Length: 376
Image 1: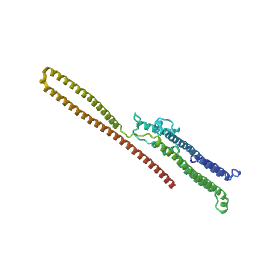
Image 2: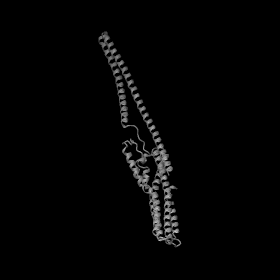
Image 3: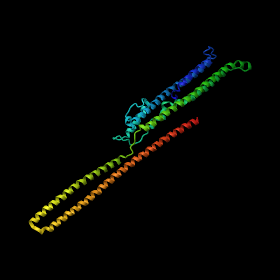
Image 4: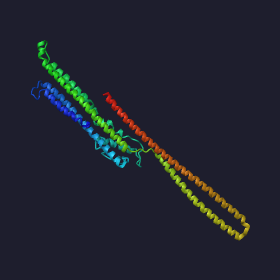
């Protein structure tokens, strides 16, 4: 497993330590030079300290990666059960990751979304979780500023030991003729041995550490990508594309239409009652006039009847006006339905664009990874 591969560094460290002790004669009791052995042991301890500090960062990174993987699986399971967006369960949830750094960043994301949420619970502005939980955050947790120079530091220690061993050998090398020079060959060779030993294990640990470090970071980035994809699919809060002013206008228009309908019904009822009352009054008046004055008022009756007919004509015209108003109301409702359909289509197009952007981002990430591998 890549995420635990840094344990392999310590296994190699112990084996290399035993090898260094063996070649310096510790197990046989034949230590050739105390100074050479001290230099080897000192440089080896320094490399061990560097590896321990790196292991602390790697452990923090693995905990964060495990938290991302665990939350992603939990979201995916809940989404499969409910088949509904999970933001209502996570918008105020604390300790989502059970990791201090990740929980602090997710709390910032929650506050950002809350600031762009209306009283009705509608999110009016998009905010990507990648602004808070991203590769830069994993680099911070993994101590990239430190681990990125550990490999070079190990190589530098090996080179430093090389020159230090050569310096010690040269200090012991004295003489001006062939006889004295031959007597100082042994100290020179001893110093060169120190030089080559430090170079060997310095470069060896540099190569192994660089391989392990890149493997751990690649695994962490993969788990981060899995979490982000799951979050976008299952939990990311949906953003409303309908403007509140437009909503208010539609509601106002619907209220006005209902009010106009009520007025028309009321006027229709009054019209019918007025016609019936007027017919009754005319009939009574005509009967009384016929009884009292006879046929002299027949012309007056005809005039009144004409007035009734005019009133009926007015009623029919008013009914046509009512029908025209009803058609206007129906056209208004049709326009409202068309606007709602247009908004839904716009939201559908935006979802497609978001998925296209996500796919493009994934392809760019893959391209960067391949480029990094190629450059290596």
